Image (cartoon, rainbow, N blue to C red):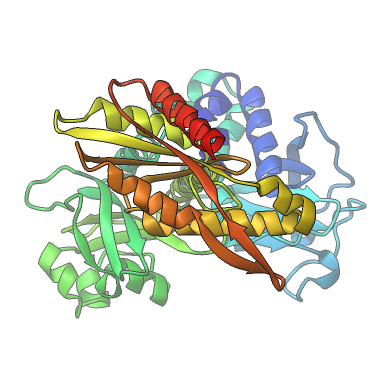
Length: 481
């Protein structure tokens, strides 16, 4: 579930006439769960159920088969006994009801719909015509969070739209983060909404570094000076309430002193009420936690868990989106064969370095072209040519300093750029010559690697002219030989 397809557009999803809003939300349920049909079931006092608003994944109205009584329906089981996931009725356990009367339904997901007075009014459901192999607890959390939005819309199907005020808070929240471009701008409105929702003094998002064994409070909102969760606080992960809550399966309590009386962290921070849900990646890895806390006892703290889990899922989606973007940029910035920087890195790097030079500094660029490289490909094959390029890239990266630029421009052309004190640029030539003139063996055949090199030193701030000058000198060097 990506942040762009969920909370950032919930303002549009929940806005307007109830039927249209429900159509959009049920379509979203189908998309997120990869199901064929989503709908709501409304229970009656006579042991029956009424199916409302069956919507297909493409947003069109669907149809269901014969209507069962609540006692015989998966929806009734979800409404009366809590969330139900059925990946494949053919392999389902004994706790699942027999196959539904609606022909072809094989997979099912459903959670209760709860009215404003706390009574169960029905269920939010999705069904699939084929077995589903990836339904999990995160899908249940998402569905339960959306159920809190769907319930007031269901009530509004038979009433005027102005009576749907319970949904407007989420619409306002969605509008506040619409267009959020990074994790912070998505998370801060969610955390602020979480604090208001729970009524607790602090709400915060943490990030966990399992390698370092630490947890950091990344973003927080606090309303009391005598009880704060400070942003940037880093603590050992093993000693946190968050980890204990996960390990012990206690996501919420208003009596921390009894449940975790031995926690030095809780005593130091004065925590009495505590709610925490994991921010988990799609592979199950815990990235962090979404929490709310206070120094006084609060009522009904577990009631906030479905919404917190929905928020956590949205945050996790944004974390994964940003990670995917960073990985894509890293892959685009790296030459896949040699591990050197790609051509697209060269000009921005040179522009940044030349723009910030002091009077006693220069940027020196070495343009490298391998000699007789085509002959290697023609006589030994392209695999041998690739092996030569890999070795050249390795030698150049080994010779360079961590902050130097080593770039493969394409083919057998490389570029090395360094920022050095004026007058010391000749040292770059020695390193490049050593790195690109060597002997190697390919499948028992000796290969002599040689190169032509041109050096240019920055006289102005034009990176393109600097590279062109080094290129011209490389060709002059090759011609002279």
